[in-house]
Length: 206
Image (cartoon, rainbow, N blue to C red; front, side, top):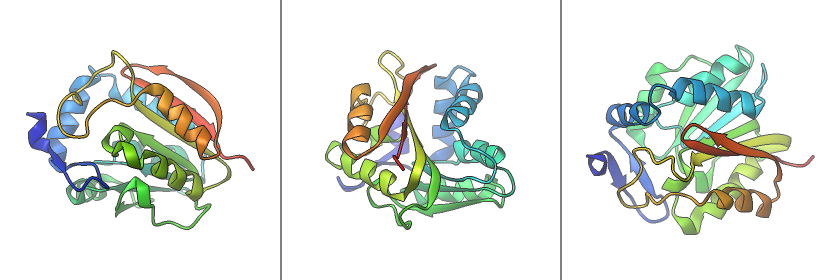
């Protein structure tokens, strides 16, 4: 079933999710009714404040974008980027006016350097080809302002959700998140586990 909602594009793009409604259902089931609580915790961990500019990399249908929009308020801005045109259309229809969306990939973020206060990426790194993941982290580092915060979360060992089959769907070694972040210049501030997820919170030094 999952293979039917995934589309493997060129190796430089990774796996694209086009059947967004089905994927949303799979994800909700995987979290056993805890998805909203877990994602609200991610928003809190990111430190997003009213007025902040936030980028969600691999936003899919915009679930996390909408939660960030509540955190940053009317004076803030939240941007979502995802390689799936269907996902971006789905997200645009459901998001408030303080949100904007772009079709694109983590490895080539088309935003000026220092554009965001917070960059988040949840359940997206394992969709990026292994050879391109460091490039994606470099791009997330570039678009953050000095002193900005990065929050990356992916499935933790034993926390297998719907992402267990299909091309490009191998789980990320949790240590890789730390290693990529540190290698491109982030300072790790904290790491930990949530239901289904392991997260890393890092800062771009001022």
